[in-house]
Image (cartoon, rainbow, N blue to C red):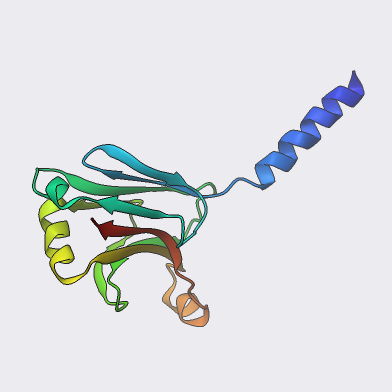
Length: 141
């Protein structure tokens, strides 16, 4: 019995060490993507032009497995030329109305959503290297 208890404890600790952040992407309240892997090839969703003509929104919800105190999460939308279109600071959700999406897609056929974190302390933030994490690519069909 002791061996089984020890084995189950070991397996549960092992599985918790592989826990990671996850994010969900919705458009017009329809789930489009759920993942925890930053994959620019597979994390692509398509939105039809007709879906932008109805009242609705694009929503990305980011869940951190391990919340880092004194760090600030950023969520941002970029175009193909790597120009920032929208940025949210200190939030775990990015919501963009269809009207704004429509304006973005007038100039860009593809937009990309990224996240990164920075320490709240500006001195510490100046000393670290920031790596953006690709969450999803949104293309207009």
